[in-house]
Image 1 (cartoon, rainbow, N blue to C red):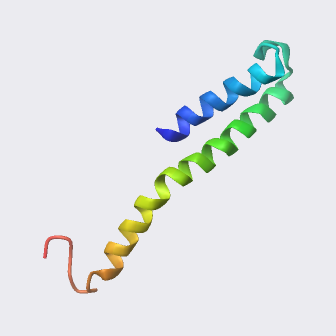
Image 2: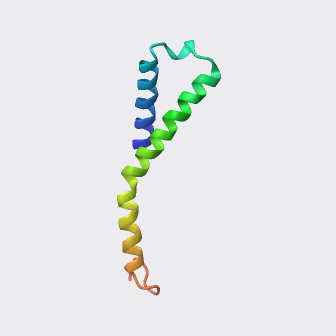
Length: 71
């Protein structure tokens, strides 16, 4: 969810900063702006999800190898 919201807002801000509507740029330029938005969205997504990933890894490493989730 964070990734999609961040991507949309980033692309919106880039076009606003450049001062021209999306349609005024060629396909190569639009692809570059989309790439930038995806790059920034990926960073935001990693920052948002990393703490939870660390907790899950820590919980799984503390569990004995012979135990399952139910036991």
